[in-house]
Amino acid sequence: MSGAIVIGAGHNGLVAGLSLARAGRAVTIVEKRGVVGGLCAATEIHPGYRVPGLLHDTTGVRRPVVAALGLSRYGLQFEDEAPSVLAAHSQHKGVVLHANAARSRDELEALHKGDGDGYAAWRAFLSRVRGFVARVLNERPPQMKPSSLAELWKLGVTGLALRRLGNADMLELLRVAPMCAADWLHEYFNDPLPSAALAAPAVTGAFLGPWAAGSAASVLLYECVRGAEVKGGPAALIESLREAFEAAGGTIRLEAEVARILVARGAVSGVQLADGSTLEAPLVLATCDPKRALLELLEPGALPLRVEEQIGVVRMRGTTAKVNLALDGQLAFRGREGERHARAVVADDVDDIERAFDAVKYRGCSKKPHLDVSVPSVRDASLAPSGKDVVSILAHFVPHDLEGGWSDAAREGFGDAVVEVLESVAPGTKGLIRAREVLGPADIEARYGLSGGHIHHGEHALDQLLFMRPTPALARYATPIAGLYLGGSGSHPSGGVTCQPGALAAQAILEG
Image (cartoon, rainbow, N blue to C red):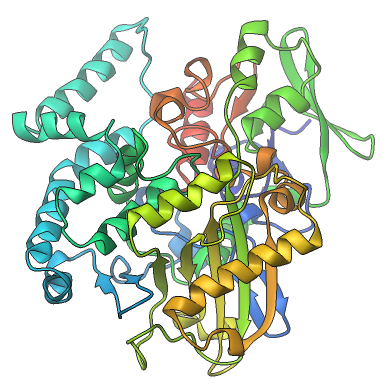
């Protein structure tokens, strides 16, 4: 009998499996696809051109998790500093936003007098609250109804940490969280471009625009855990985790789709695979999305009706498409010929982003989508032939349930719209495209098994973040079925490439 079964060989599944294996458990990871990595698996889109993951942002990977797992012994390294982001513009050269505000001052002041000071003030506030916010995100959710002195103490310590921010920052944090990102950022900037670029994280994995209440919280949470990227991107993270897991004695079974989580007398007993075979184990950790785990893989009635109802209303409306480009040359942004930029955000102002979201509400695709652009070949030249680039684009907004469906014509039409927007900030790009891959939310669901095609296993919204994720009753990773746990991006602290949900789920299992 295997000691533990982990469903899903994405980064959270590998982190959790490695943590359990290091603790002496016999762990088997089962993966539906034929490759390890989930959303972080590398993909060759054209001979010689590789994209290191559907998700390309590794700035949220937690260094304490990496250190605790000893991944440096397996080649994992970080870049020297947090990456800069080019806020590209369709009419001028835009502005480069650095984590160190002083490095962006001249360009921001040239854009609009006073915006350099505004950016410095914004970064200063984030640096003061970063410790508290990171602590909340990096710890297991507290027991909201403490049943022991230890649980009561932990809840009190969290409250005390908030109070130690001081009156001004504590009140500002409480004021900002429910705000819309646009209003918050407009308090610091006169020119609309930096506000648009900094609001971008608020709309990734969310069914809302930057003018929606609560979108500021997403910006805040993203910025307070952002650090240096992993060298080699998501694929390098996966390779180090895979090597470490197998070195710890773990087993990975690919093309092993789970058809059913088996339950006997209120406790998990293993899984049944799609080929009819079964694996027995008293512990199952599901890192697929919570709807798939609890509503599709369990027999109806296995959970209390109240829990089924709560999971049933968790919102997973995918609004992100992925467009990968193989270029017969290097991507050059307007006014920045000769410069190399690994990351860029494309939206002239927050109203452009809001208008892009408007189309999704009516099951349509935006004709001017908001783009989160990564050029991984800037840092890793091996991903493309010499002198050429591979480009990874997360494009917002598109509906999973597109009116008329995601036909080939609809898919290519949206791909054309993405290229037109990129062309507006990087003239000449269209003529360099050798190959293109377009994945709408329905394609992402089919390839990766994500409910609703949602890249974060559930929308980022005030009622689906922090201690509410995926539901208040399931926020501490355990389920009402003994031995069954959740540990994917649908759990606290949320989606993206962080490693934290898997690490915290394993901690919950080992500490009981």
